[in-house]
Image 1 (cartoon, rainbow, N blue to C red):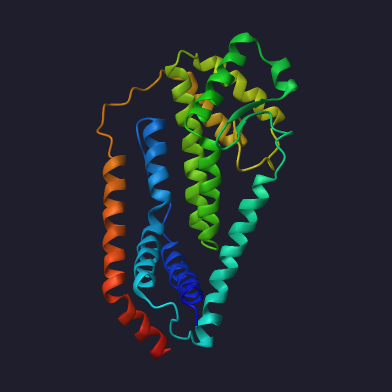
Image 2: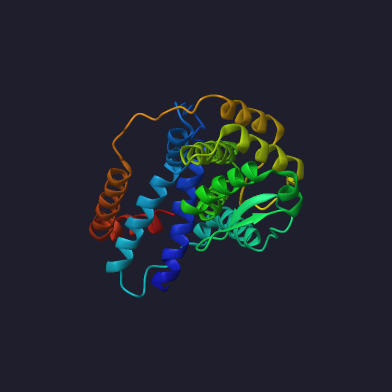
Length: 281
């Protein structure tokens, strides 16, 4: 059997199984003093369940590097065992593609576009805002554009769908999405926007916002309870964030080292492990 086909079946089966096993990871409490800190913690927590699957995938790639082009035959039962995980993968891919085709015409105030983000402003919202509130809305959306949040939202949606049907996966996504808006509110205020002006823009966007808006666009509105929370925060003095060391580079370095070790282990022991798996089953 072709090595690539065996690799594909094993990736779907083993990585899919690892995602399903780790998808229970709870939303947890990621309390923080500022929205920016909360957003960073919620973003990292959302990707914790993917680490085992990443290492398994790297090990399988290491196995494929040394495996002959004609690999061992995959038992029929493994094909059938991989079907449920393949269905989850196909569902996630379909939803990701569908979100790319979603119309942004009905959005009130939003940022859309992956590599060249653009700000969308409904004429109804523009007519309802004064000059200062309109500037506040644009400052909030420019913060989304700087961080390429539409792309991050799309990736987060895809990641949550890959962990279906665990409800905690979608809970982590919603928790991060709320933290994202709080972080961008704070960033806009750090750039000189007054809290009441941004609150007026949020209220206007909420009145025009449709709940079925695209998940791949960073919108200014939200549901009623979250709008109340944001306005309450905007009415309070802006909280300062204590200087902290940026650990993102360390996390990426640790992940890269782990992936390289997994590839090396795959090249060394992959043939023995895969052969045992295919023989036993």
